[in-house]
Length: 80
Image (cartoon, rainbow, N blue to C red; front, top):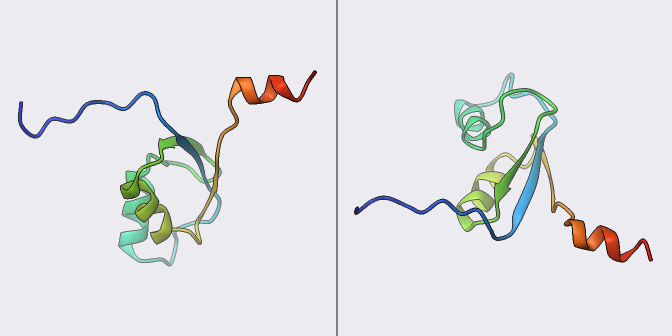
């Protein structure tokens, strides 16, 4: 069907944590926080690393922290 997108299960991810309240900020910042899948302060979600998401994160960079999650294989390599 036209207009449908495939779900991206694989690929790089970003871990986004909401650290500062949106009280007193513009409605656009609140909407962007919701669009990222964040519902509560100090909540963390993993989102796909796409240009669209990067733009959303740039818009609310003062409200969130962004980390790249470590993979299980990367953790195991340092243990030897």
